[in-house]
Length: 284
Length: 150
Image (cartoon, rainbow over all chains, first blue to last red; front, top):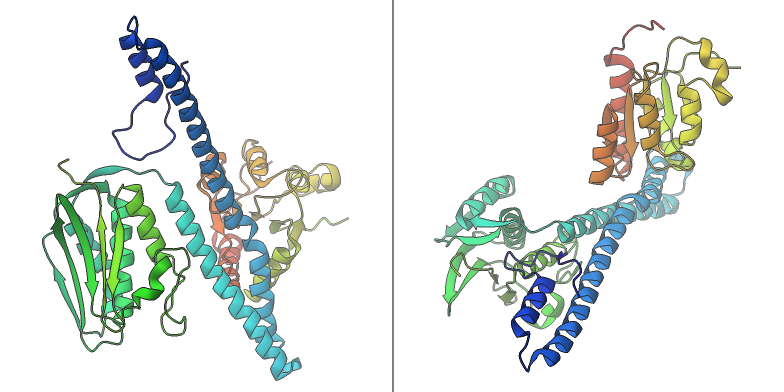
């Protein structure tokens, strides 16, 4: 009995020191008829707990190793593919047939795409590894600063933003900002073909939960195809029409789930999309 | 036996990265003398004028800049920084880390050991060539080093 009570996770501030709790329970049960059974069951519990902890630590170091590999090992060969295909396209073009040049441009395009995917994967991986730092957060001010950053994308467009009152919450500010950034940048992207884009940011009450949402009147999507909407690299529209690696929603899902919340969407083809999510409430 | 002063010491184990870097420096019209070594051990021999480079002890002027990869066989880049920067004779050589890694531990350790600059090699060749050209010009033309006095 006994062993490290260190918890290798960050699910929330209210995590319990399990071994200490076990010791306390044993103290309380001393001398009682329940003690033998309790001792046995608590012993099993502690073993399970230690295994889980170990798995979590292993998982974390796997993440680190993976993202290091992505970050470093994959880049050098990709740089070679990108570099030499580009050099051939630009400088040796005269000596090459049209077909050769065309194939070289496919190679180059492929490496560019792969570079983008790598960066997205890296961003996703870093997010997964960064610890949660929750504090009293104002979604309203976060949305404000996100819209400022997205300003350049709104140039020359008619966009009708509606931002309702948003209750404060207990969340990691940077991650919440990333969530709104991804949702709003999607909203802007998929309303591009609308004469007037309508984007709404608000919240609603669902029982005793606060549900935040971002709604747009854009191209939407078919709900029947949306099984893996929040999966990594999942795309529901042709790349030629709407660019993007398909990592934005995966990040949103990861962030929301780490907060203990849920995220879901409702949409129709050409009928816009609404994304809803919950986080812990400020007053629990 | 080459006794010409070396302006740029390129420490790079990857042959394609070496070729791309040299090409980028040429494109930026940097005609200074560039010497390439392929691992940290050879880099240290060069910097300290010993081993294969003992003949360089007579040359007063060191490289104007050392472009240093981090992940290399034998002796890695961080160890090169550690040794070069902890020795009075060699501390002045500017070391620019040129690596694929943008991992925080590498960044922190490189600067902690005294690297002058840290450039992450872009995957995109155009950006890479641009970065190498710019840093080459900066360190060989713009940057000023103290006169040799040892």
